[in-house]
Structure formats: structure tokens, C-alpha cells
Length: 603
Picture 1 (cartoon, helix red, strand yellow):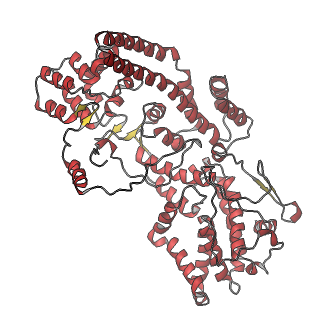
Picture 2: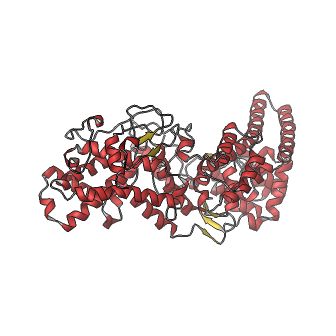
Picture 3: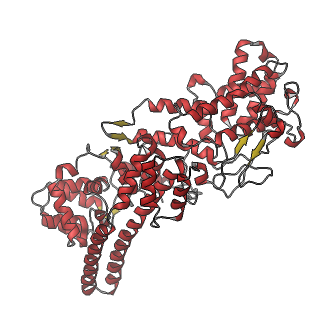
């Protein structure tokens, strides 16, 4: 296995900002390779490290020996000799010729493997290599097609622009995009040959640099593109390929006929699939666009009705358009999950009027469901924590609060927080610093602190609240845990003697909380702990830390001189994904009306 491993410069990419990754299609699954059970031999290990720094002997790429071809091009051999080497090694520089029909020439060039691109640039600048010879080196036996000829002619005419790194997009040496304009980003997101997940990046980041109206206009322009133009181009290519297939099969033996036919058919199928894939990608952008926005301006509504509610697109899109135009709105979590938002209504003066209205959820004990929907998982707090059933608590007030189980209090506090958190639209998190809904969310959650500030000062108050905070962190709601820790820590700083009242186990809990939410090291311990948690089970990040990090990210401009910084876009997108994943997860905890009424009573 290691013996045949080749280190390709194309695969070198910068490390992601955060590890959690969220798939915006619930049906998508990600597979990992099985873990090795055998240790590699010393010889294979040596071979592996040797191949990192030297060309591997008899290494082949695209059916040919890349080392031989590379050295021949670099040595400046005559064109006739070069062609012979290309033919002998069955080598061609462009591995996906069908890409030329769907992707601009500059993008085709920069998607080539670095070594192939360097050889192509040398040959394109060499006057002794004519267009026909260059086409054969690029396309192999497809060099006689009209597209091959026109592609080479375009490269010759725009040589300096095509191989320029600092244009739109801006590339690094390995073909990774560093910067690009908004419109180019949109086109690359639609590109069926994109293998860098730019579609997912676009749908999760467009709100940072597009208004809904701007994005809707781009989608309309894409939908209005005359299909017959691209179809005619592909149809002509299909005719050329079929003619080539007939020529090849006439002069080839039976075995070669099968290979030639399979190759041509495969290319034709790829082109046909690329058209369908482009439409699928546009629909995915539209689905996310319609799912995250609650209301639209009149001109956007008109565009949606005219161009997308016409039977050309999926029923899901048309249904979302109808809902959006009826001001129903739909959140990201409902788009990716079967669970609809729950509405909390209450009355301070009349306890009987407090209700929890749940849509499409039975009144039963709720258990933690993972985002994958096919597995259930729950996390016990501790064997030492005696958790009584929530239903056994019928009255909660200032006098008896500290006598109740910290486990039950922690769970009910998480329930209270999740009710607020899950009803927040995802789009508000993109602009958390100016969102009125997030401000109201913070105020409503902090209202519980006003209750706790009085209770924590009572005898044994610090000990009980440390245990509640520990329960919250153990159950993976770091917003609740962090808020309680700040409350406890502020009191302990004012009254240091309260720490001496704690038993050894509670002191250890407090020290662990201090390490987790240590602001002096910029919450490094918290981030590492949160990222290490299993993404398949529910967890909620600390909103205090999340907001601070988002504000830090926004200090660096995402757009400069009309070009987006893609690394900055990725960081901000991954930060939004943390919230999206938290909103999609389900903390299935039974609600206790007594607790919820008590928490709501001071707001």
C-alpha cells in the first residue's frame, strides 16, 4: 500500500480553521477508509520516505511515465522526438478533455496537475511546437476534434492571461484558489467539475458578501441561459466523438475497439452528466437561499415567481417559494431536519397559561438524537449524581431551589436554553453584532442569571451551582455551562472564602470548569475540548466564545478590491457551520412546567 503511494503537490491544502464539518444534504454520507491492522515493513517505510523527495521509479500518471515526459520537455528535445515520447508512453497533459466544453480555458489550465501545467506552459511558449502537435500532447487521440483545435488556438492567443496567477481567480502554485470575485465564486459553485467543495462553501457563506437580491439575480441569469446554446455545442462534440469512434474502431482490433468505444462513451456521459449536475447545484443554492431567508422584497418575490415557480425546478423549491411568499419562512434547521421549531408562550401572572406548543412532536420523553438521524445516544452525568425524574418536581421557588437535584436543574436549564436557541433563524448569526433577535435571545437567557444571583449567595449555593454547571458541560451545552461558571467565578472573586467551604469533589469540578473556560489562554482549552467531541451527538457551543471569535474574524475584510479572500471565507463559513450543526441536533429532554415557569418568571 505504501509502496505505491505518490505525494502529489495538488493535494497540498491549508489546514482548516475548525474541525467540525456539516453536510447540508441530510442524505449525504461520508466514508472513511478502514483502519490498518498490519504494520508496514521497514523496506516499505523507507520506500515511502524516499519517494517524498525523489521521483518514484516507474511512476505513471494518466497511463504514462510522467518522469520521462517531464525530463524530455525540460531538455528541449525536438518536437518530433517529444511527440514520439508522448505516444510511446500514452501520455496526455489534459486528463479531462470534456472540461473544455464547460469551464473557461484559464480554469482548465489551473486545474491541471502542477507538473502537467508547467510542461504545458513551456510547450505553449515554444514556437517550434505548432498547434496540431500541441493539441496532440494535450488531448491525445482526441486532438483532431474542433474543440481541441479551438482550445489550443485560444491558449496561444491569450497565453499571458491564461498562465497568470494574479487574475480572477488568484491561484497559488498548486492551483488552489486564494482570491476571486463574487460572480466567479458563483460560477465555480455551479461547476460540475469542481472537486474542492466550493458549492458547500458558497451556500454557507454567500450572506457575508451578497444581498438576497444580488444572489437571486445571479440565479435568474443562470436559469435564463438558453439551453439550446450549450446543447448545440455538446451535440457537435458528440458528433465529432462518434465520428472519431467509428474511425478508431475500423482500424483497431476487437480488443482496441472495446477500449476506444468505452473511452468515448465515458467522455460523452461525463458531458451529459455535467449539464444535469449544474442544474442540481443551482437547485441546491436555491434551496438554501429559500430556507434561510424569512422575507423577501417585492422585486425578489417577483423574480422567484416568474423564473422558479414554473415547473422547471423541483417540487421542493416550488413549495419553499410558496411558503416564503406567504411569510411562513423556514429555518435552516427545518430544511436539514424533520424537526420544526417549537413556539414557547407563557404568562407571568397566570401559571396555568404557560404552554409548550410542539409541532409534529409527540408528548413523550425526548432523547438525544444525532444529526445522522439513524442513531440514538445519551450521556449520563455521573453515577454519583442522583437524578430523579423531572415529573416528580411539582414546585420550584427561591426557597427550595438548592434542595433540588443539580442533575434535574441542569437538564431543565438546557431545555430552557434550547427553546430559545432553536427558534433563532440561522441568518441572524451571520451578523450577530447587529441582530435584534440575538440581542433579545441574550437578554432572555441572562434573565435567569438575575434569579441565580440571589440564590447562589445562600448557604451551599456555590457548591450546588458548580454541580449544575458541571451537568451542563457534561451534557454538552457549553452556553449554559459557561454562563453559570461566570456567575460562580464572579462571586468567588468577591468572596474567596466560599471556595474553602467546598468538598474535594466539588473543588475538582470547579477547577475543571476554570481550565475549560480559561479566558487567559483565549479559551484554547474550551475549543480543543469542543472540537474533540463526537459530532454525531448533540452539542451546543458557548455563545459567548462563538460571538467573540466571529467578531475577531470580521475584523479582517473578507473582500478587498473586488476579490474575496477565500481562506477568510472558509473560516467564517466553518464558524457558521458550528451553529448550524448545533441547531440541527436534538436534545431530547422532558420539559417540567414548574421549572420552565420559574425560569421565565423574571423576564
